[in-house]
Amino acid sequence: MEEKRLSNEENQYVVIGKVLDTYGLRGDLKVEPYLDPKHWQKIKRVFLKHKQRGYVSFNIATLRPHGNRMLIIHFEGYDSLPQVEGFRGAKVFLPKGEIPARGKEEYYYFELEGLEVFSQDGKFLGKITGILEQKPYDLLEIDYGRLYIPFVKALVKEVKLEEGKVIVDESLSEV
Image (cartoon, rainbow, N blue to C red):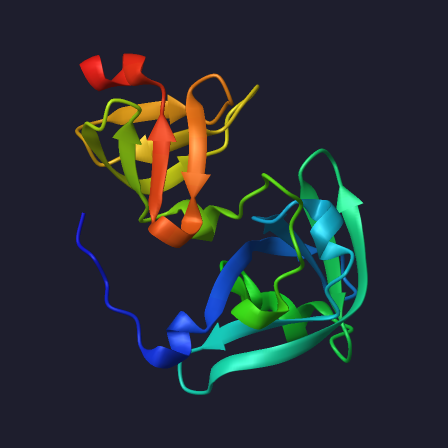
């Protein structure tokens, strides 16, 4: 996978969702959240990236859950379908400094991506390249071939954000 270098401006924003489609005729948007929906309740504005104007701010007028995992969002001043049709497929951003606080032993995906993974016996297994949301648990995607590690306490022993590494059960060093 090719690594894309981000500009300083891009490094200041985190993707928190994606606009999947419009919803109804009054300017609502169906959004796939990348943050836990409970964190979205605290967010008052988000940013969408525009090709010419960069990151553009949108105030959230209303936000409600839709089904098991989606959100319906309405932006202030966008009250018709034609006004929001161009937002389909757009990623939704927040400045890093505005990300809601997380609980102890909770991690945002953007914090985990890029961390080095080591077994308890010190063997380097690779870097986290992504997280796959699966039931009943998420999977850490490791760049060591096609290695997926369930993100559960029995296998992921320690996350050391400040050191940039994750320690997993030593049984995984035999993979």
